[in-house]
Image 1 (tube, rainbow, N blue to C red):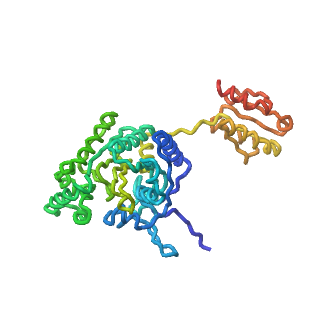
Image 2: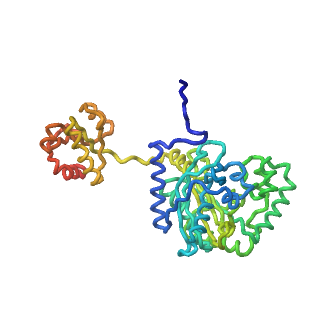
Image 3: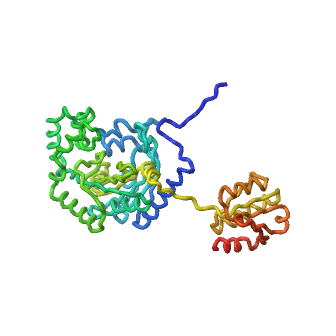
Length: 424
């Protein structure tokens, strides 16, 4: 019989325990920040209707044209594995009548998303994102606060060399005229564009400014800038955002080529980078305002702003910058010998759990020597030796692994004695 060797699908990977601790740390810090700023956690389905993303993200975007995982159910519904988090939250806002809640509605999420693209370092086909969304407030202070939250989270993670870049791409009042001016400029220089941008020039002209191909950089550098064509309202809004960031002394730089890759953005857009040990900038987060999205999806006119982090990229940088979240040291090891001791050991372990003292064990091993060897590898300061006689007498041996000294302790006093030892 031929054995079949199964592997993870291309571009997807297992998150093993040594890597999962980074995900846990990021979510833990995000939860504390979210609680402070009044964001509630939301879980949306991993699958949504395909039309949700076609309508919101845009038919001409790479996500919709090339990257969505789609499937047809037995009931003939077309569904997509979610490629991004904002559209599902907008759908949930409408469906669950969140207009009736106190505005803005502040939500955050953490979970897996899916895009079919070329796998590379820090980029997978199943990837994780962390996002913050504030829906129902048009004030520019919300834009500044979302940027501040993202910046603070990276600082809490001890990420170094954080850089915020931002721009304004206007709204439905001033952007159409800018797009015509940009299209006219690019038409005269289309021979200098890469093949993708020649197509983008007709389908989604702003995406040309987002191109990373070397061939297009000189064309981008001389292109008309969005800031020069903003209407008075968008100009005022962006000026206020910058003033708020100046007030909190958050460092930023303007980037006239920054447009983001999704159709629903309006006004403020931003990206946050950090430099690795080789001084290479890595994009960690991005977002902006999307005032027309709720209305586009059939809801009311609800202004909104949000941002999302690429978790794998954050973890990649944490490793490059040698930001290691050390596991708490195991100071106590429980070694048991014999069946009676093994049975009673479960209760001893439970007492340590209740008092939040970390303790290790090796219940599968009977040899005291093997158990002491494991305690040494864990660098445990103390070993509790629990044998048949000790189990009958309700006592336990406490050995100091540094001095080799041993003492007999009553089980009733065990936690109290251990606390004294650890305080020293």
